[in-house]
Length: 229
Image 1 (spheres, helix red, strand yellow):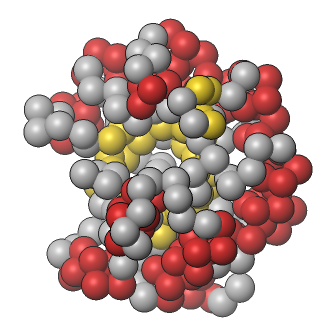
Image 2 (cartoon, rainbow, N blue to C red; image 1 turned 90 degrees about the vertical axis):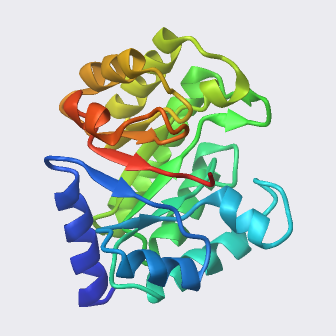
């Protein structure tokens, strides 16, 4: 690990301690550098954007392609990069751990693990084990990389906020540093998520024009991303 990588990771962790910030999602070197020039403090990859840039659908990029993509993004900027690492590119926790270790080696400052396989969520017990495996893998590297626990229910029309919160609370307990339920649009539901996870930071996807940054910041949302939109 270079001193530069360590500094990026320390900066990224600091961003999550107070206030709020926007985390846009570039998909290539050009978009990374344009966003950096616009003054953003950190960036995150987008699995959808990367797949589309290859002429494929979201989820169709291979692990090897994604690892090389993350390495390319990290080398192209002085900003910390958060990896959209989908479901860890494996089902079994031990395989997720191996892949997470490889992701850390690309230089990312954070990475997310999802709880969805196809159009279904993993059983909660297995989803927790997968987060625990990712946490242990990061810790074993000795690197200061943030783990983001994601629940994908709203993407597959399972829009029960209580279920989403139950899963996020479990992922927090399993070692996730940041919690994220993409596609939750309602301000009251996002407030409930923030309150249930406090003091840990929550990420919200700015999915629609009606989602106001100032309103989300006022309810305690720490970071807001744009995803592939």
